[in-house]
Amino acid sequence: MTAAALPANSDRPHPGAGVPLRGLLPAELAAWVAAAGAPAYRAEQIFRWLHGQTVETVEEMVNVPAALRQALAEAHPLRPLAADVIQVARDGTRKLRWRTYDGRAIESVLIPDDDADRNRLTLCVSSQVGCAIDCRFCATATLGFGRHLGADEIVEQIYRAAALAGRRPTNLVFMGMGEPLHNYDNLTRALALLEHPWGAAFSPRRITVSTAGLVSGIDKLAAEKSVAGQGSAPNLAISLNATTDAVRDRIMPINKRWPIAALLDAARRFPLSHGRRVTFEYVMLGGVNDSDADADRLPGLLRGIPSKVNLIPWNGFEGPEFVRPPAERIRTFQERLRAAGVAVYIRSPRGDDIDAACGQLAARPIDSGTLGGSPRPPATDSATQSAASSTRSMPAGGLATIRPWRPTTS
Ligand code: SAH
Image 1 (cartoon, rainbow, N blue to C red):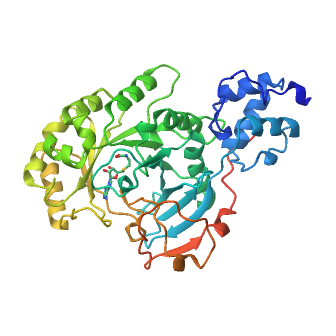
Image 2 (cartoon, rainbow, N blue to C red):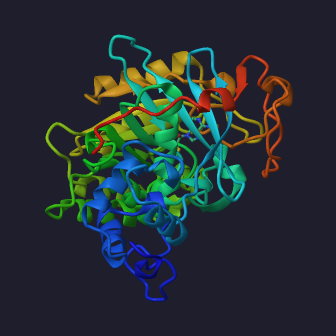
Image 3 (cartoon, rainbow, N blue to C red):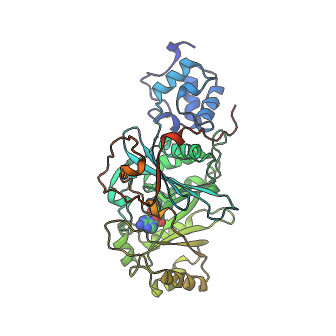
């Protein structure tokens, strides 16, 4: 192969032009390989290195010719996430903070199963730096919108977390920072990469996309995934959080665009594979949405939707004037729903002692005393320091050297 045959600096846009290397779909990689005059099998080989072996540099693709590797990295740079801080909560939940190539901080949360026999390992994944949706009860909202994450940055959270954990997560939930359906193109690209048999081969049944209620995104996901050959849809979770538009308008401004009835219609239209249900998340806010009247309205709203409800006791952070209802109130709310035939669970807060629980992700600077004095890049956000006194934190470097799981390679 000669450098002249390589398309690296071609002015002609090719499929996937401008997409970072780990975000390229197999067909885009194949087009690039063909344009480079390399044999077709290189596309599969390269994809397996990126998504199976999850290499961090192109040099690690040892069976790919050096000239081709270099041309590839020039045309489509790798943008690795740097492991920044890892915090371990008392319940074993680990919050992983990453630095992006442009110095932004994002977080993922590794959640071990509270039932050790099931041995589930759930990874909560971020889709954006900050968030634009502005839910009043959510810490990520206080950051405002930074930018969308690329598909490469989304899948890297999973690959790097697997490396740190020493095993791959069994379940992925897009419930970290950001609104996944606001970043629709990168989300669906990431799903295609994660589900591809040459890579991590995740089943869409093991993936849950959680939305604040972007009806256009729900419909688009439903339409695309109903097309033959596009694979089945991931599980859908909807953050309902209220039973009247008056309350939902107040706590989730997106409700003014798509009110409850429109949102529930979209849920009714969503294609569910056999035995699947839509999950409705319901953050419990004392005196706001936790009354008996709320509990009595909810079953009627959900009628006709195969569904379950997860009650999430509000997780506090500095700022908003919300309170978590007393445990007794939450149980009563659950009982009323259950009596009306609703499948309803209380989601126990995981990792809340390190601000890793639902709605607490704000990539705050962490007290350097908890880091063993390890050097790290300056924080780019302006939020106040978190109290991490009850946690064990460690610099990421030591753990980050653990190699990822090794699925099949060619
Ligand atoms: N943007 C997506 C995913 C991120 S939020 C969405 O809205 O679904 C993930 C879940 O955490 C949502 O159900 C949200 O309602 C909930 N949540 C947000 N802030 C919370 C908080 N402070 N306490 C408890 N749950 C919260």
